[in-house]
Image (cartoon, rainbow, N blue to C red; front, side, top):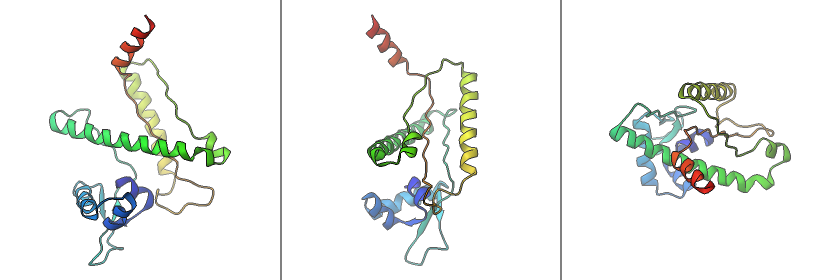
Length: 177
């Protein structure tokens, strides 16, 4: 819902429910929860006494639980799982649309992974540099819900960074023996 408000602009609970195929009561509840925690706010200039419009409060959301434990850590992991699932849906949809893209848009699309042996300090430096580049690019462009010119599209860059899972390394080693 938050992503939809970012990309498509302000909407009502009913509009979002229809767009996502959900119950408007549940959608309304979740929108109020997002508002309670500062992710969205009422778009007061659009609302009426009978209709509440909601808008995203920020262009991006960063929810860092690296220093947390217990319930807060578990809630952060649950949120991350939901975000990753949504990213996978976006990637699958983009792959489905790929054959219909003009060649220049195909050239800038990709799914890559790069594994680099680094120390934790090097990983932090690299992650910070990449995020700075992305945030500079984000701030140099109009809001995601702004009308786009005919040659402009919203362009999504999904960045996941993590130590390569030990389980995968062990499995790869077993396969080589």
